[in-house]
Amino acid sequence: MLVENLITRSLATVVGDDTVADAGQIMKDRDVGSVVVVEGKAVVGILTDRDIVLRLAADGHGSLAAPVSSIMTRMPLCLPASIDVEQCLERMEAHGVRRVPILNDENELIGVVSLDDILIHLGRVLGVASALVRAEVAGVV
Image 1: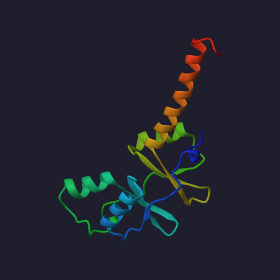
Image 2 (image 1 turned 60 degrees about the horizontal axis):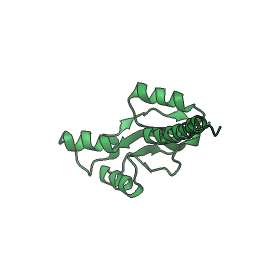
Image 3 (image 1 turned 180 degrees about the vertical axis):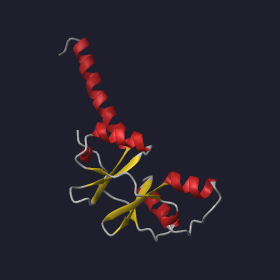
Image 4 (image 1 turned 90 degrees about the vertical axis):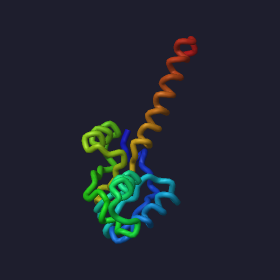
């Protein structure tokens, strides 16, 4: 299966000059754990709830009034929509990330895929497989 079938297309984006507080409010309002930082149509970073906690709250440095660009992860892993889910998972593991911006063939942001999106999909697949096994054992198939 291609990752394009699992992406969240209702994007939460900010620009680097937006404040961390603004980004946090967008995350809260949209019930998401990250915002993609864009400059025009280009992805320049990603800011996650974890970034805010670790780089502001835990370190005790910075301010919610600081620009997103001061704590975002620059040049994040971005993947094409045509990548296979298994390959996407391998790349996510290799880079130690849980969320990845997804790009179309023109390198434009079209969505984000999260580890949760992939796990939900895999859970559904396993549920179907489990039902088939139960039906076979029961002699229905």
